[in-house]
Amino acid sequence: MTRRDPNAIDDDPMHALHAHGVRLGTQQGRRLQWLSRAFGPLVPWNDCSAPGGGRTVVVIDPPTGAGAELLYGALTSRDAVVIPFGENPGFDFLKSKLTAFGSVGATADGPHELWWGGLDWRLPDDSPITGTVRIVSCHPKTVGDLHIYHLRRSLERLGLAFDIEAIDVRDRLTAADKADFVARMWRRYSEPVLYVETDVMFQARPDLPLLTGCDFAAHMWNDWEMSARTLYFGRSMAAETMLTAWQQIASSYPDVWDGYLIDQTWSTVTSQIALDTVWLPRSYHAVAGEAGIRNATIVHNLKPSAADLGPDPGFAAMVRSPRRAGRTGAMESQLIVSAATNSDKAVTVILRDVEGSSARETAASIQALTSAFSDDNGGFSRLELSLCPWQQDVRIAREAGFLADNKVIEVAPGQELAPSLFRELAAADAPRQPLNIDASGR
Image (tube, rainbow, N blue to C red):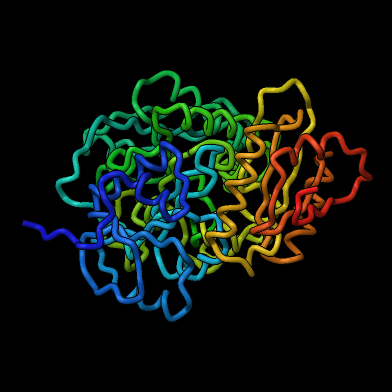
């Protein structure tokens, strides 16, 4: 019989974490409950925790460098780490030491990004698998069937349902072609779909997305470049939203690198709905002939050269660091809340000085801002909230807000806000420059 940790959080994680200032959405609560079943009971982290196995360690406050080392040393491959305030850059160092497993996006009900990870992907062997996945792939008609021989044979050998289709395109498949194809397959079949490039071979059943029950799954190449070579879409409304947004963005920019487009789609969608994302392990993106990858599930026909494995020069440098930490960057909104109003006016709120504030203080300000907007939006149709640890981030977020023709205000963590903040802001006939709200909220 497994001995229960005396510090374990009770069976209602949403209620237990609320006492620590954590406000979770429904989907985030479901993910926490799943983690406690898959890895072990929820246990709050402290510097005195001893090494153990089979726990879900909850980290609410960013640890110091030494604290992160202690936490890392206390983990085993049977543990998971959960960060309820995953949008806060104060956790970036801890995240850099761990493997990202997934995240659940922010909403007005749960205005934080729930991040989870660990030492390495390892789910219990007896984890139940519900349902099946359909493998889909497409290629230009100009490419013969010989090109898909290994993919087809591997899928037949594993007994997996699949659909491989030749597409009538000129020279190559664009991101728009892929998005349209995947959307068509998703609507044709009742199972979740896993899109792969045709030059891959399956060596095992791709059960991980089904085991986790996520909305969307992808592999982050080099820990920050999202690969469009392996994409999973579940059967949820959130998955459909992600797929539809990818279609729209890809059709608008058909010649842009497909990895960047799926990255931008993810950052847009995860800031507006509780998108449950799983980051597929390297075994789903193994390179043919590459050493050190054991038990590969999907092998890709890529050249394991320095050019292929190094940073892509076309990927925007300003979003690389946030992606390594599994969060949005300063130019992007961490949270977007829409209001039921006919107005086309939007407001950008810049939460500045995040680096010098505690995670709980920053979280409380996020919750206060979203609550104030939900209670009285002042006629604004949308709230776009950006977290900015440095002054350079503030400038980037401010300029992005101005380019979108939004009203822009700056707020510091812990600042008192008037309940009618957004109504007063909408009524003010202020010049086009950021407004600094003083402590009284006037």
